[in-house]
Image (cartoon, rainbow, N blue to C red; front, side):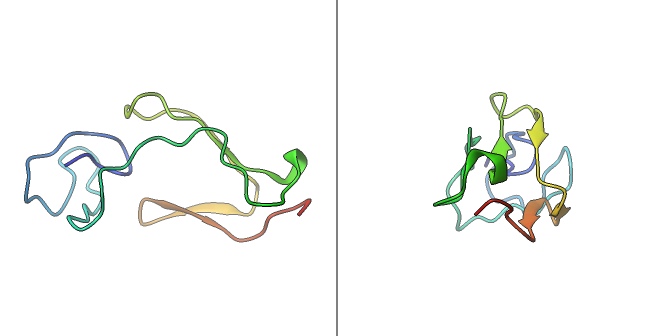
Length: 81
């Protein structure tokens, strides 16, 4: 199973990533990197862009209100909506 946080391939049945320790949800499909994610109706000034690099990490440009919580990004506010 591919880790949704860092993209590491883990053996089937594992609950936590062997690389970063993130929880692996066996009910979820393997995560894929998102590119140019824009909330519906948001202008480019208020959008959030996540740029993946083939599951090996990568850069992410996030709004100041975004924070990482349990391996997932939490968007608290979208500006320019």
